[in-house]
Amino acid sequence: MVRVAREIDGCGAGRSAARTRHCAGRSGRSRCPGCLSHLQIVRFMQADIVIVGAGPAGLCLARALSGAGLKIVVVEQQCLADISEPQFDGREIALTQKSVRVMRKLGLWDLIEPHARAPLRSAKVFNGPAPGALEIGHELSGHTELGWLVSNHLIRKAAYEALLQSTATHADVTLLAAQKVSGVKAGEDVASVTLESGETLQAKLVVAADSRFSATRKMMGIAANMHDFGKAMLVCRMTHAAPHEHAAWEWFDYGQTLALLPMNAERSTNAHQSSVVLTLAVGQIDEIAALDPEAFARHIEQRFMRRLGAMKLSSTRHVYPLVAVYPERFVGQRFAAVGDAAVGMHPVTAHGFNFGLLGVENLGNRIIDAKTRGLDIGALPLLQRYEAEHRRATRPLYLATRFITDVYTNNTAPAKLARDFLLRAASRFMPFRKAIAASLTG
Image (tube, rainbow, N blue to C red; front, side):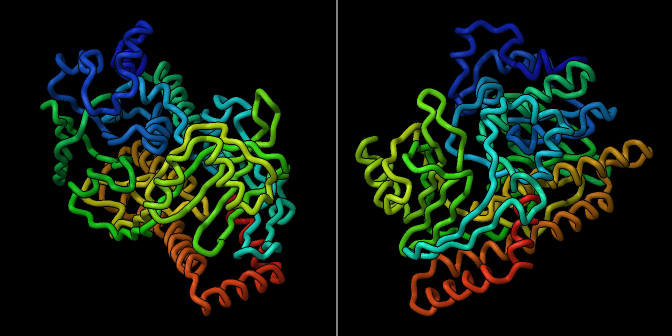
């Protein structure tokens, strides 16, 4: 039964342009009749794995498992057009070398055009208005670049296309678009997922990949430690007069945090281009986001102390709340969480999606190994081994990120002295700089 090519495209594999427009932008708030057409026939479905969430982590896990002899169902509340043709959302993902290797293995990397992959060759950390910075160069990592920057929406699109290609061969994945989960239950032998439309899915394992605020995780009774930083970040692309030399900036200024992610040159003008990230209190961010493009550009120039020269807005602007999330457990009976549903990172250390891919690889390998050996893919001991390994890999950096954001966004006099001392000491301590480089490359 080939469901990705037919049902992964719930609006019709050969849908017209008019049908595509009909679905676009609905984001699951109301359902397109075309997205539900196949569900009018299927009221009950049996699967090996149900993945809730068709974001990058959910799609990558489905792709990693495709071809292993498993029947996989992916449930996503967004309409198919939003999954297959995601729009620019402002977020640029800093990928480690290890993450790029995983993406190559899954077939994603070559689906992203080269110009959309920007090399990250160094990272600079600034403290307040001081001109000096802690610099981590690519030469400390043994690579020609620390990593790569790719837009989030392009990663999502590549993950969808890679899954389509694999399923065209293996016919083992069904994507139920424009569907929302209303309930999850897990027993000793089987788990069930109930959809708002009335359908029931049964599987040996349910995987949550539905954001850091995962409703699926909550339905399983798993609590999470959430830290609301009380701030929001504004993200957009801007061109600027001064070259960025493919260096990322993290600028812990007083009263604000700025970041600069170096992108490849703007296509039409060949101007230097970067993703700009401004973090402030929510009210301040909303006021700045409402400025007209010219006033916005002059405002951002001033916040960067004109270190980049004249700047110009080159994309839409997007605002996101800053909330870090770490669940008390990653697994339960016939249940596991991956991606942001497992670890929702503050973006300052740029490891959110890298941890997502790490979890996908870890869990995927264990599931495939169990399937090959004829073992239960949803057995709790298997899931607990995934949890232990993923916790060891993520917990230290999660806590370190909390420490960094607490110290470097605290503007009291003792904190200012402490952060200046820490940066100066780090600049002189080569093993520490090499450790940061190793972390950035993965």
